[in-house]
Length: 55
Image 1 (cartoon, one colour):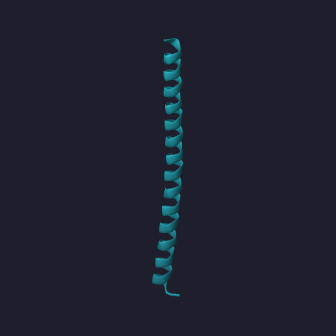
Image 2: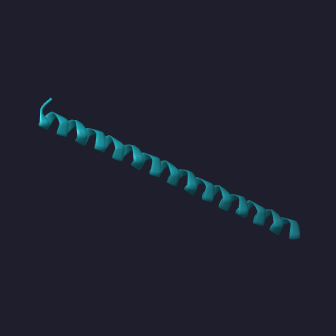
């Protein structure tokens, strides 16, 4: 195998590894954001229920 072929294969493997790790980080961010939004929505519902109850 020529050096240029090895270099191309190595670059492709590094690119794939970088993309895979980036997707993992993005997915973790999406899960965290969704969790925060669900918690905030739940707080709003609880506050609205308390307000209606007090009236």
